[in-house]
Length: 349
Image (cartoon, helix red, strand yellow):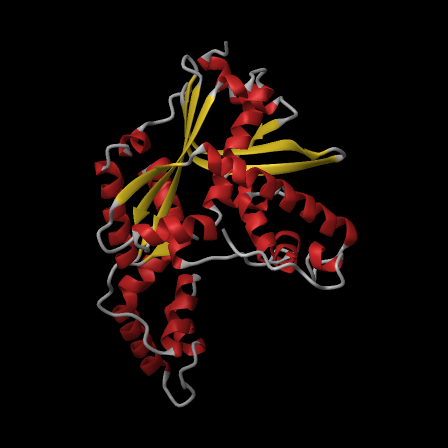
């Protein structure tokens, strides 16, 4: 029997070779060299894309939907204080830059430049103007753009959201909180049963002779040691209909593969703590929120059949990644390389 104090003792976890709880923010997590579900998704897009994004530091797949989803994750799991440290909402300005010169003027002033020097160096023709005329024009432009400039002086590297994005976040947060299961995102970490943004790094035997290091970041993990139950919640935002989300988005974006990897991570965590994962019930739930239209929320529990289907696919993908790393072949898939460039067409299930 594992006690509540032990299962959530992060210091003890970090002393285990098999599992590490990663510290730091999301950026530090993304820079970690272990393989994530997103990395596997990039590899399945193409080996070259994986090589570009994972090994050469290229840009991965991104969209306004992913960006808004990340913001909602932080707001719900980390709270408003952490959200305000990372995000800032841009207000509607009565006056904003409307020309390249005005944008350059704003940039120079935000960087700490004197407004007269900024005016002289932002692209306006000032050779024929007197110093008094330049000063008058600089002060006039600064007066018009003061609110805009003051806002950007206070950004301090935070991610900017426009008013429409902020309004959507408010609607989505309200939707989550009003859902019967939404209370799980209101639970605060108490040192015993709840993890927010739990980042795990674990070592896994893929096959005989091949060991790889994987990682995963789970939005919410709730542990019930007395009942030996772990519930994993992953928050997703979608602009699709519910039919499209279930039939297209989950398989297309690899949410089913992600669920399987996170369950594996928890199993390895239990093993590292001397527990038999077969004695535990590990549930994975996709908490999906519409990012427009009705802003509805639905919670989908992933069945064992999905894990059984995804397990061999994950193993094969990791084995293939290792093959590409060893051979240095990135312009073609392993299957094509071994068959003279040809690949077998396999229709989606």
